Image 1 (cartoon, one colour):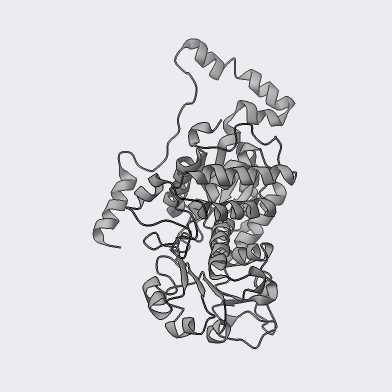
Image 2 (image 1 turned 90 degrees about the vertical axis):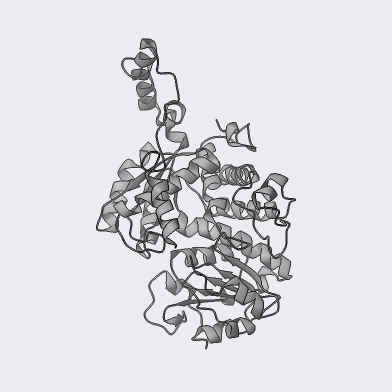
Amino acid sequence: MSRDIKQAALDYHASPRPGKISIEITTSAETARDLSLAYSPGVAEPVRAIAADPENAYKYTAKGNLVAVISNGSAILGLGNLGPLASKPVMEGKALLFKRFAGINSIDIEVNTETPQAFIDTVKHIAGTFGGINLEDIKAPECFEIERRLIEACDIPVFHDDQHGTAIVTVAGMMNALDIAGKKIEDTRLVCLGAGSAAIACVKLLISCGLMPENILMLDSKGVIHTERNDLNQYKSLFAVDTPCRTLDDAIAGADAFLGLSGPDLLSPAQLKTMSPHPIVFACANPDPEIRPELALETRADVIMATGRSDYPNQVNNVLGFPFIFRGALDVQASRINEAMKVAAVDAIRALAKEPVPQDVKDAYEGIELSFGTDYIIPKPTDPRLLGAVSAAVAQAAVETGVARSHYPEHYPLTSISDIR
């Protein structure tokens, strides 16, 4: 990053006021009567109503449109374990995105704990304040246990976006790429380079969408995850297969698709050449992908390419998913975000990419041609239709699978943030 950009980033966070979020008053607080209703003595009435029926918290407080973004700072972006306070700019940024794209109020909470148990206890004890919890930047494998146990303990959605948000957007793009390449998901051979939380979540969701487990080779830093290894944790062992393949060279030969969630320049042109016709390459390491798109296209003109970067086509960006997934879950007061809701989000994102792109979205990208094809397999983050399409699909799936407390909203599907009630 250049010196100018570094300074611009610091200036952006420092002014006009430090940070990126604030709290606003949503009702009148001008007169003596207003204040008597807002606090004493009037506030006693909603207190009594909630004590009589806890569900009234959705009616009389901000709970139903409030998400906590919570981290321990153990895996901050690509920077590693820098601690909870250092994670605060990222968590505030996540809160900004919730508000900007889905009208959701969000508070960031950085938890200074030494153990998963202490983190779980802390979050469990404050969970009732919120309508949902977004876990963020927590290292693997602790993140798996933390999320699982909090889902069991809480009656609101708990969602580790580094896992599932990444997976939902990745799978939507991957399945559209398979359509363009003329490949059937049940016949697709996938190589996944990386075995962290995002990689495991992506592969699990691909399996839910039809990918066959026996057609997947996952690699960690020691090579292919196979059944003869005795160094695998319980999460990696789920993907151990009986195979003679040991290296990426072995695994990639003849593969239909490559998913990289690892590090820069780990997929070579020689390896790409050995893949099947019309290979699909998702090189999602950030900021430097496993292979740069220019090099990939120079090597294989038939490659369908995606990265995590905004300066190339087909950016795999979590903001396509998490704001709208939570929007749909909150609007039906869901108790959790289940597999059906994730698949519904995948299908909605996939379908939207196949529709004609509005002119205002094209204008935002300076006239670049945006139509379903090799350079446009997933929608752009600025597409306003995501709010309606993804939120509605998630809300409907929550209702159909019995995890919603309320009915599908009458004002759905949403067309803009102004529709939010």
